[in-house]
Each structure stands twice: as structure tokens, then as C-alpha cells.
Length: 343
Image (cartoon, rainbow, N blue to C red; front, side, top):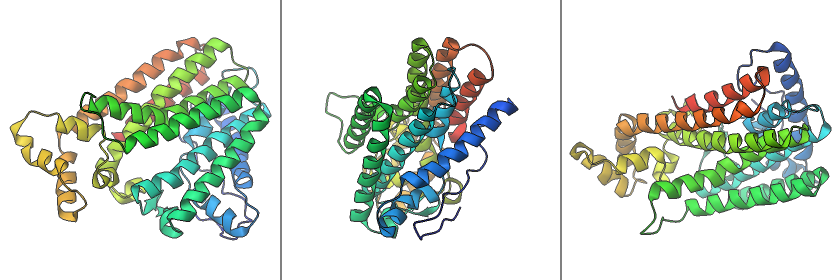
């Protein structure tokens, strides 16, 4: 998906929705609203100069599934006012916050690819990538202020959790701390928090009952956790052309993920070589390639996938707070799609 670098073009229309929806009328409504969100995103990512605009739109133009704004729009369907203008604004808030975090993420990971395109730090440099992320966070805060003090508080709490999760990712767990628990706390902060807020905003601004808002917030937290865990599995399992990212980035950087932690916990003597590699320096291309190859066929991969499916199942069970129908079915499908991304 290409995009003009003049800084003045309107964003591309999104492809088909990121999940199949059986109800044609619901799918059509969501598609129309997603197109409006997509156009608004490019408008909100505009700076006062063409250079800043180009940098801010760089990762937007690379595409992406737009899971978070879609979840806002879908959750809003649980209330009587899914077409409220605040719903579209909230959808832009969560996506701009997410995209801003990707600029920082890629600097931390020293990533060269993002969504099949050059990462911002590769195209520009680390300084521009970091400041562009900050610019987008400022834009999301500006937008949130239009949604009232409750939304500002929720956004601030969410952003604090997101950043703390990113910081914790760089910190070794303490001697008395379970590495897996530490990792899951990172995931909940980095990814679960914003996806929970996506569902919460949608339900809130769609006018849903408070019990539904609470259920969808908890649902979003679980779906967000599953989303990040499946992304981490894909980091090991997929080839570059499939995922649009450099495979094994987390592995190379020494960032522990669910499959790695499960493999390290193995007591099978046959895993000695893999555990030796994982404990050592994986910036060496040959060692990295060998570790990737061994991990891809290790039982830890299937164990990790089963864990992800379990979190998605928990999320679906929370949806009993909603009446049966196409919206609930679509939210169940949303959880399933997230869970099987790693399959």
C-alpha cells in the first residue's frame, strides 16, 4: 500500500475488515465507518510542515489491520448510539496512540522493517522516529481532550500502563520473580491496556450499559494479551514476507517471549543445545538462525499457541453480558481471529 510523500494526500481506503462478519448490514456499517476513520487518521497526523507530516504518516501509510479502531466501532454497536461522533474520535485516539508507540518500539528493537516497509528509524533516524512518536502521542492527547475528562483520565492511565510495560520489557525479572509472570505483566501493559481501552471507549461512547462497558473492558484486556502473545509467536514462526517484519527480532534482542520462556523451562535433555543458544548471544547470525530453527519445531510453540487460545476463550466467556446476536458473534470472532494469528 503506497502513499504520497508530499504530506498532503488523504490516506488509503482500508482493505476488507480485519475479521469476517456474517451480518452483511453490520459489516457494511463498520466498513463505511472504518473508511471515515482512515481518512480522519491522515488528517489528524498532519503537522505544520510537510516533513513532519510525512514522518507522522509513514507508518499509517504502511497499512496494518487497524484492530484497535475496528474494536472501538464494534464495541460501540453494543450501545444505542454506535454512530455517535465521539466513537470515531475515540477510534482515532487509540490508533494514533498505537502507531506512536510503534515508532518508539522500532527504535528499542532496532527494527528495519515494519508492516513490510522500512521502519521510521531506518527511513529517517532514531531521533526523528522518537520525536515523531512523541508528536503522535501529543495529537492523540489533543483528540482525547474533545471526549471529556473521563476519557482524558482513561487515556492517561492507559498510556502510563503502556509505557511502563515497554520499560519493564527492558528490565530483567528479579531473583524471586517468575520470568513468565514478569513477561505477562509486560504484555498486559504494552498491548492489553490499549486494546482494553479500545473496547471500553467504544462501549462508553456508544452509550452501552455500565455492566456491558465493564465486561467489554475486561474482554479487551484478554484479547489484547492474546494479540501480543500471538504476535510474539509469529515473530518466531513466520517468514519475513508473511509477517512484514524481520523474523526473530525479539530473539536477536534478547527479549524473552512466551515460546522462549516455555522452552527455557523444559527439563528434556534433548533441549540442551537450544537452552545453551537462548542463554547466549543471539546477535550472531548463525547462532540466531540455529535458535530460530530449533524453536520453530519445539513443543513450546504448540504450548504457547494453546495458552493464547485459552485467553481468547476466557474473553469470549465475558461476552455473556451482551445479548445474543450479530454484535456478540462478531466480538467472539474477533477473539478467535486474534488467537489463531499464530496458528
